[in-house]
Length: 213
Image (cartoon, rainbow, N blue to C red; front, side, top):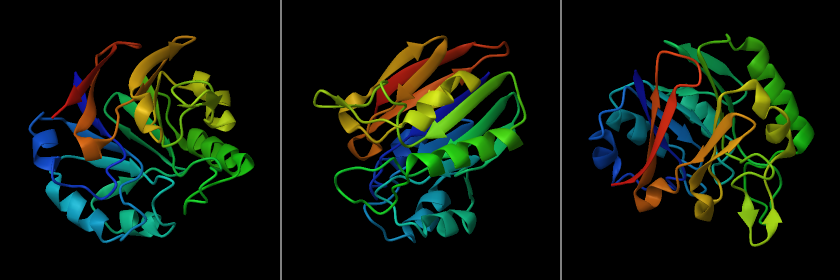
């Protein structure tokens, strides 16, 4: 069993990190919006608090140079990349598809597509294969009012994974399953929300707990 703490939408708030880590995860994954438009030195402060392997992608509210900050921290930057740990393989895509708010880290769908394909091409297929995407898949946990605002590129590649960890839409906290693929939005960590993901020894043995500390 591998126990993973999934956080997202910290927006620069680190005050609950100790309580999150009291859940005793083996791994921490952060699905974007580490900062609220910066500063990027928050990444160093955050990674210093985490004493287990940590993986992250940027969010749309992070400055574009946050990728460099992640590369120079103890946290692995998964944006457009992949990493395997035990029986779990991770691929990542950060930022978001365009929003009406012109936030710092927005990507056009062809660029999202290119980065996902690149990450998948380098990913070792494993017992559990996980996509970490700040933007939700289009049509899944992505409602803004009555409009679906998720990424079509993420949606198009969902079936290559067993689990998609997403964020971005604070009010869409939850777990859904689409064609055998689980999708989880843990809710904003800035408000104490998180998820614990329990990976078993067999394919599809994935348990998800939505929690608040």
